[in-house]
Length: 351
Image 1 (cartoon, rainbow, N blue to C red):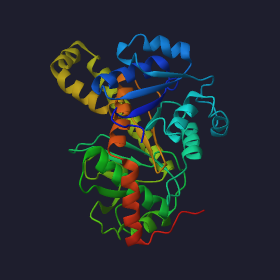
Image 2 (image 1 turned 180 degrees about the vertical axis):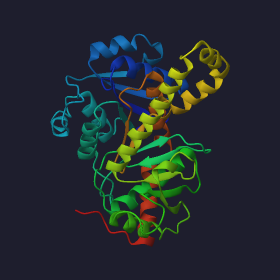
Image 3 (image 1 turned 30 degrees about the vertical axis):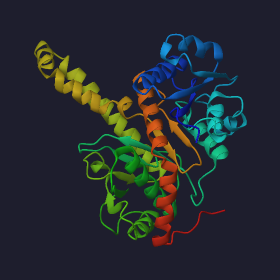
Image 4 (image 1 turned 120 degrees about the vertical axis):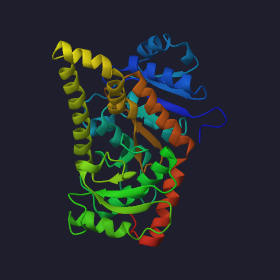
């Protein structure tokens, strides 16, 4: 690894996101203040990036690599792949491939980032497909890891079982859990419900005996935030819909409360009394506080920051990158998957 004794080295796509260098560099500065050991390599238009770095003396020693291209939200994955060597996103991923960084982070086009990362880093031995995993808030003591959130629209039973192993390893690394509770997202909790792929995946997961995690059956979407599970596994199509529904509901609740509290003088007075509770609620629902989705299953670490993340959200995504580097998540996944295959006789990935 590239970390040595100087701390983790993060390759940052400084041009990604809705705002670009201003947010990405400011986020890096916040993360550096939290953890002075972090080293950054910033990829993007040198003039723009250097101007932002000048605003943050804490980043004065960061390396800046000039790139000609920027992958936009309208670019197709195939177009992004062809520009991997010239774009800020592509160069950040290639830095991981070449051993110049421990992890890459981008707030750019998710599909493009997935395509570039998968083509250049390749999937780990024995894993058919990588998955996009993220932490989401719950009413319990811990967040919940959910995957896949959009990397794979269709998945078979083996894919779902692999996601479960990877998600459990991530939960242990990110939240320090000794034995994460794993469930499959389904339309009901009864064993007879669900697609053939989901039921077959459940049969595979029930063979888990290592003690590193446990399979607790199915969970319905309305229970995701109750704190009853640590890892929720689904295909990328359903996972992305669930994620967007959760984010939309959070915004709906906060906007509805704002409207209610501003509807009359009495309501405004009530807001002043309830402001601490409202601030706590807004913070709990703010996606910036849970920013940083990880592509699990690749021969290298890539983190996706939300495109609309603010500097604090960007810093939180960088914190995720640092955490999974320090916890050596790739090794954990490899060991857990080998153990699971031994017990479940999980077939090898297709050639």
